Image 1 (cartoon, rainbow, N blue to C red):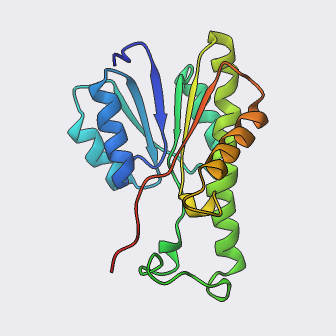
Image 2 (cartoon, one colour):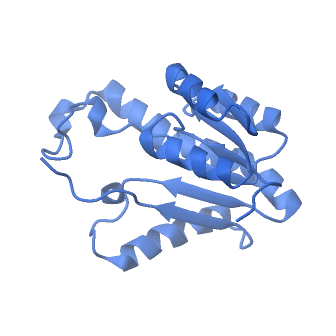
Length: 188
């Protein structure tokens, strides 16, 4: 697929999935804005893709003003990939094998999760929609952990319901809004 005329913003670009997304969109010819709070990771990405249409930018997506400044500076985002997130790995490394209990999460950490994982994705989506409406085309891809969205891992109706609910919030039928649930079962 040739994306040479599209501009893509990828959050959480310095992580594993983020780096793969950056590489894929760069290879497809897109102009990519790779964002993260990991300056060292952004530098590595920049070195790897130094002769491409890649820009890197430090962005804390939980900061509404920083999100708006990034979108304004971009001159329009055609494809948004909401990939940044705080995971339970911030609480404990073995969180996939032994679920984190409510007793382990402080109110401050909870606020950080909500500000990043919910508000951050919402801030970005809200900021890119005007350009997408203006040009009559747009794509928003939300990368998320399935266990936080669908109550039953094997229930495709739950996945469809989650997507329908997110699309109804935007209320614009020309926009493709796709959830992605990467991963598999935790291993020991």
